[in-house]
Structures are given as structure tokens and as C-alpha cells.
Length: 427
Image 1 (cartoon, rainbow, N blue to C red):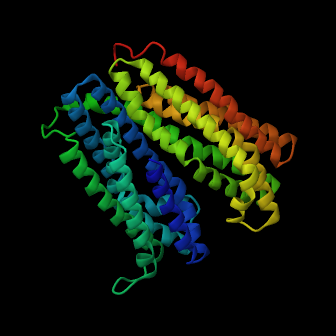
Image 2: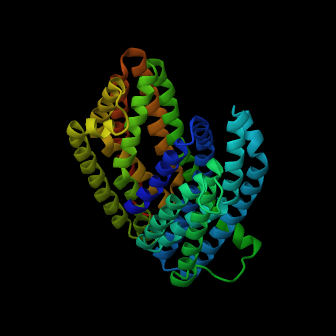
Image 3: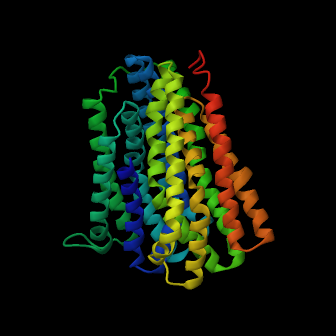
């Protein structure tokens, strides 16, 4: 999963690099589309979490027919939802982004990009759900390799479609969307071949309306809270960025550089949050909650030790890492300040995302959502606002570190309490 997550992140960096060569308008267009893209991707993440949750618990119970029914219905539900979104998004792209403030050439670039992107949305969401099902069945290697191949294809096609090559004309921002379209189509075919022929997770029996409704309810019970949970973190970071803007552009830039580095170094924690789902869900479904608890305990120890190691390394490596992104002394100092203060607390953040993924897997998605709300809206933003009113940027960074530690402690206690008695009869 570390390889898969790193591959996905590399595509975003490559898009930014290539489109940055086209000028400010191309970068502005990509900046406008990010929140909308992330919201739509969050839907895919939520549907994937829902499908993986119901499938892993059915696998744990040994209910093979139930696994095939749930997996098939999950993919059907996802396909229907994404087709509706794709059609609506294709027609509404221009008015939506006009309402968000885009205009002129930037609006034209956005519209061209988004219409291609919406055409390819089924090729993004359906494989996400299928990958969740494969991981629920116990294999994280093949999906990760497919993610890596998809990323390589995307990055290789980016310059060809953006700048043109041979008989392919330069398509600028729209070219990035076509590169993504092709790579996702390749990924979709590869993943579905695995699901159908190797994992044998699908059934050719069409469900009755009642059966489909039951499956859809089970998936949505986890998927909707998981989707909302994934949208909360970028929203809270945007609010914190707005807070820091009162200190000037340097503070915003320093925060941006530091959080980019933070995202890269927390890849192992993000990967672990993907990996714990099958372990927690299968053992929960099998009625062995003590193994779910042990998986949580070991995962928490890992992320805490990982966070402490990262925090210690930032005392020596924060400055050279930040210099990769900026030469401005003020921005550099602020980035180093963030990394050295917040880095030591990253284990708490790791506990939150790992526990949230485990809650989704054991059919406690509402708890996972509340955990995210606790960290972001009860602690992160209020403590940041309090620090903003009373001191310099480093005090805001210290409040973020405190948020991670406090949220991690609360969530760890809650996780062990909720998994103490095992699944209820309704599971």
C-alpha cells in the first residue's frame, strides 16, 4: 500500500510540474478544480470503504454466496451513482466553476479539463471499489502494483498530451485530463479482470430489487460517513490556511510547504490505514474481536513509534527537505518550525486515521466520522483559532501538535472500548 499511495501522489506532483510550465492560467485552472475533484474522489473512497467493510465481514463469517452478492451489488450501485454524476457534471461544469469565480481563459481551460474528467469518472470510482473488494479478500499486493502501473502510464502520457508529440496535438490542460482518462481505463480493465477471474467475487445472478436495496443500504451505511470523513480533513486545512493568512503570504507558503512534506512522510501511516480494514473486518465477522483489538494495538504502536522517529529526524532534516520547495528564508523558517513542532506528534494523527479505517471495517462508520470531526472541528480549528489570537505562527503550530496528541489519546481509548465486546448480533 505504501507503493500504491506514493504512486497516486506522484501523479498529482507530475501534473503540477508539467502544467506549471504552461504558465499561471494553467495552474490557476488546476487550483480551481481541486476541491471539486477531491469531493468526487471522496465519494469513491467512501463507496470503496463501504464495499470492503461488508465484504470483509462476510468473508470472516465464511458466507461466500453473501460475499459475491454484496460485491456485485456494490459495483452495480457505484456504477449507477457515478454515471449520474458524470452526466450531470459534464453539463454543469461551466456554470459551476463560473459560480466559483472562474472566468475568461481560466474558465475555458477548466471546462475543457472537467468534461474529459467527468467522462473518465466511472473508470476512477469503479476500480476504487473493486480494489477495496480485493483488499477485503486479503490481497493488497496486486492492487498496489496496478496503482503503480496506472501512475506510470499517466505520468508518461502527461507530456505527450499536454505539449503534443507526433500526430498528437498539444492540448494543454485538457491533455492532462486525457492522460488521466487513458491510465484510469487501463487500471479499470486490469482491476476488473482480477475481481472476475482470480478473486471470483462477482455473481452473474441479477439481484431482485429487494436484494439490491438491502445491499445498497449496507454499503451506504459505511460509505456515506466514510466519504464525508475524507472530505473533512482538506476542509479543516483550508480553514487553518485562512487563519494563517492573517500573518501574511509567507506564513501561508510555509504552512503549504510543511504540509506537503508531512503528507509525503506519512505515507506509511496512510498505507496502514488502508491495510487494517481487511484484518479488522474479517476477524470481526468471524467473531474473533480479540484479534481485531490486537491489530489495532500493534498498529497504534507502529504509528506512534513512526511519528517519534519522524519527529526526531526533522530536527536534522526539516531544513534540507523544505529547501527543495523554497529558498525564501522566512518561508523556510516557518516550514522548519512547523515540522519540528508538529512532527513529534504525528503518531497521534496516525492513530486517528487508522482507527477511523478500522471503525469503517467493523460497521462503526458513524464513530469513524465522529472521530474525524473530533480532531478537525472540536480540537484542530478551535485550538488553532485560540493560538492565532494569542501569539505568533509557531504557537498555531504548537496547537496542531497538541491536537494530534490529545485526539490520538482519546481515539485510542475509544477504539479499545468499542472493540471490547465484539460484534453485535445484527452484524
